[in-house]
Length: 240
Image (cartoon, rainbow, N blue to C red; front, side, top):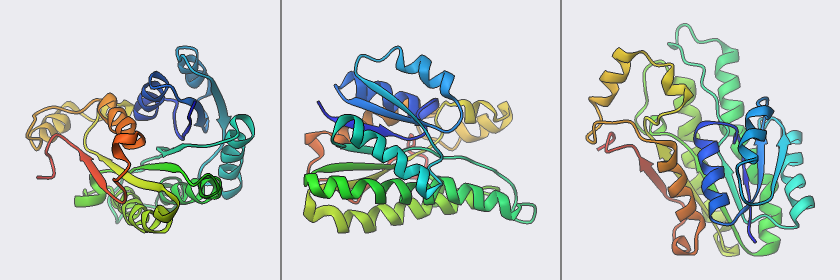
């Protein structure tokens, strides 16, 4: 049975990814930073073996511990989904250094940390799948999200570079760039802002976490063996 690590798995997109992977037969290592109770509730609903690991992916040492926990418990790692991310929105003139650093550390450095630590295992296996969750904001930008946009754009460049490095070892590296997805993050948006956002989407609706999860399952499958270094935009056509 294959083994997957999902970071930031306690809610929203991460939770949906965990469910979809379990339904497709993956044993799971699910990472959280603070929301253990939510993750325990999720794990209780899954049909495969699940290990919960607390850790901040932005920490080089803690991210290594997450990867090591998976290797120690299951003996192999087939898939890493770098999903953990935060947002601290503000206009550039009001954005603090801490807000920029915190978002960059979790979103971009966290992706680097986990990918670096898992790469040794996957290279030895001569097999692996790495899927990084970026954002359409990293493609077209968004006012008030310079820190978030920069981190997500960085993930796209990182994905393409690492895909070239690891391809000779049969390891694929791809990114998914979600648009507006129905999560707790979008629940906090005002109705006026939601209506304006929907107006920019050709399909005229927000996506669901399951839309992202299905793409993860595909990119991890044998059907995607010849796909690497790509960015799949799941945004209802917003970036057309």
